[in-house]
Length: 126
Image 1 (spheres, rainbow, N blue to C red):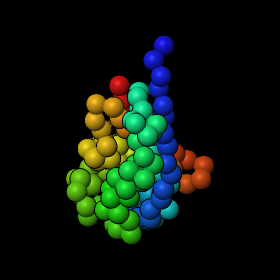
Image 2 (image 1 turned 180 degrees about the vertical axis):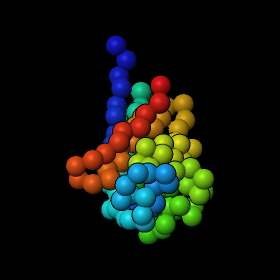
Image 3 (image 1 turned 45 degrees about the vertical axis):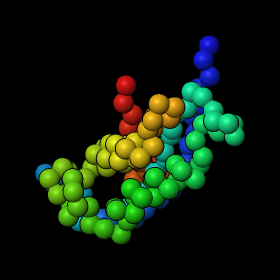
Image 4 (image 1 turned 60 degrees about the vertical axis):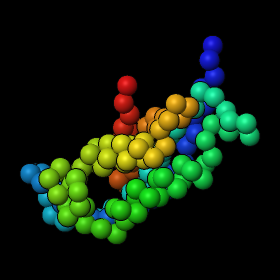
């Protein structure tokens, strides 16, 4: 059986959003202190014995979350047209971090985005 390593980092950012067409209070501008978990899968280790350095996962994730931090998401691409739901934000982070990290040996496997300490969404692709 082939080895599989899952590496995970956790970070956070704060932002505001308005959910378009939502039938409730979330249709008004409000903010969250989002927590982001980034899971990366590696099937092999490098010559140091790492799948990928945690600092590389942190750097790529921070580059993406810095675009969102202390911003009104509805004003940013792609959320100026795409509803900035937790689901859509998680998919955005997945794709953007993947652009930086994915290669033949390493792939972003999942993003878990916590809207509150009791509510999150996990995004992954086949």
